[in-house]
Image (cartoon, rainbow, N blue to C red; front, side, top):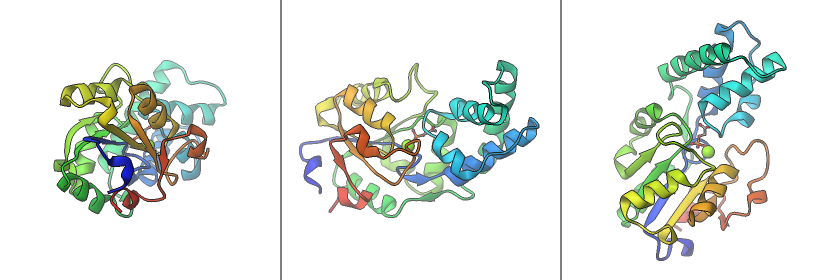
Length: 222
Ligand SMILES: O=C(O)COP(=O)(O)O
Ligand SMILES: [Mg+2]
């Protein structure tokens, strides 16, 4: 095990850009939603930089790009519902687990760590995706972006999970790909570990000064 895990009990993982490369399916969902409301469709590369603050903000960023101005509430609602329908119909069509994710999650679980999943993705997508990849049962707790009153970068979801599991933040680690994971982890008193390959609005994750950056999840168990 990596020395940063010494004395730790809880490891909380982010989902999009950390465990799964989901942007190909998210982009299709956004493109179909914008097509449905009669607007231009963004590229996958554009969508990648908009992921990180949940589905409502993802749709809002796409609409603002297509309109050159922030969308009105009714259009936002229509496009959001269309996105949820299109993405929800096939959230695993193009999505892949990152290399090592399956093995590392199983190894950490077997080593006795309590695993949690804390994503800004809507809660309804978590179980279908994790069970598709055969890792759902490894997680003691899962929290979505719409599960609680606040989402990352708020520390609330992290503190909620640690409190519910009766594990001190000082014995907890947040593993993620974006500035929101690192900010939430730091504010919650968790140790923060970052992956540089995910989605961070196009910026290097070094800028968030996580406690550790690993090139691959495999480094956690090496
Ligand atoms: O849905 C998002 O915006 C990001 O999801 P994540 O928190 O799993 O990276
Ligand atoms: Mg992420």
